[in-house]
Length: 145
Image (spheres, rainbow, N blue to C red):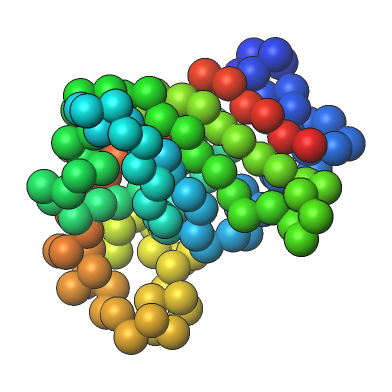
């Protein structure tokens, strides 16, 4: 892992091996944002972990984008195992990334989601047009066990 040992260390630990594997392989995670009125809102998102940050794409003008604009601090979580013996929580700062290529052109993202999009009956180009806003989460704290 690149980055400060205190930030990415939990992923490098024996207990964090589960989280590291699932950050790469899982197709959906949970993003928690804070609305302007203080309510926490959770959204299921498709994502790509690049060993430093989490990238996802959103439809424009969504509550989650408005929430991020007002309160960029977010939490990202993976589904745990049945008994929550393995858990991943990434706290971070989210920001729209206007120069990121569309999801169907982003090589790693397109490769990860080609089969799932087919399963969901969604075309790559159509999905890239619909989910046209790239957002990157930069971790500030990682908890993995």
